[in-house]
Length: 510
Image (tube, rainbow, N blue to C red; front, side):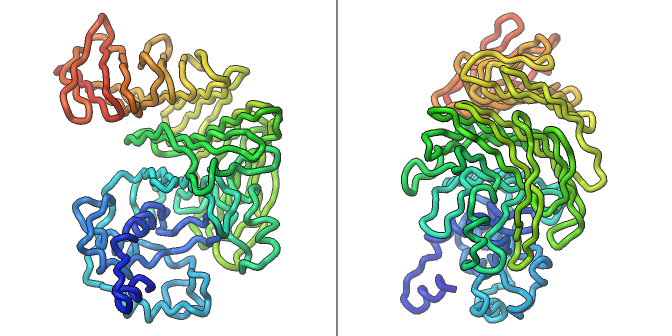
């Protein structure tokens, strides 16, 4: 309404400048169309249809074949309003703005809605790395679909107002249910004492603290560092970094194997021994489990159907805690969360977070960790994943037949296709067979199938990679970012020099 008012009264048209804001609204919405409850906010829908008509001459990266207005119309029409009382003009039964007495939905719809705009869904990759520091790991743009997996990785610069201690936190929505969630904004209003004593504190969020403090900005208005970003059809990844007031540092990476579940890796350092504590909230679920495993079970409620979130936290004992959760004004209640602590100058955590339908069997997870690495296998539905996260700065690590020279490595066997990924790595071997090697450490993900090699590389200055050619196969065409690239053959190895980041395709000859 303010943008329309300024344009109509003062002649100042701010819509072009604000287009990225409305694109971000679409990029960060979860599978039910709700915006996340980060900082001082409840979860909420967004009335993007109010500007759909205005943006019908504005292209967008969300769908290059449509206008931004089409996508905004789709977003509004694919939003679940039931949790907010249903879509009605009565502010007492439907209000998500916080301005309780100023909200006039019916009037706003009459003045700004353009129902003639055709809805068009986004066609861009559902995993989005936003310049502002938020990253969304998502496997599809579907609405109200239990197959959707959504994780918001929160890494924006600290705000000057309404700030919460939630640097590098994350929230998960999957199986149409809120899962690993933020505790929220407050019970019912901004002035409540519990807002400061609980809701804005670090323990109310999915963060790691050092000596009781959350990570902070390196300087005012400076966004935390993001690196090693991978976006493929079978594996996504990114690491963010932020310092602590005690001089320590957190490097938190999130992996999205098979675009089905999540692995969170936390590397922590400090000038001297520090008390590191990981906090993991499961939202409005009942918690069970022991050892390094917990299971949150969700009942049918306003936020979704029955579902489960299975969690394994490697390295450090788990402690059950309770704290309030508020998604929407007035729905506050106590729910369980967990913490895991380590006292050290260097610490390492790994969280395996697996969303499941209410009647689904849990995956079989085996902890393979030792003094050199955190490692685990996860087996479900005939697919076996192996993860290794190296302790310390360098050296090869081994687990369950895999050997890796990398900070983090993953291998999956799926039928006749083998998929892999490594962060700042130079080698992955599986059961004695070299899958990938690099002359210098590189972050990459790839798969080897019946038709050839596919690899996505995050290498700013270039790299040289080598792959083992399966017995009986010959190399056909080779392309990098769609253009032909020369390769070198030596015995059973094919190697290629790449100029930077991009997608490599080496096909086998017919």
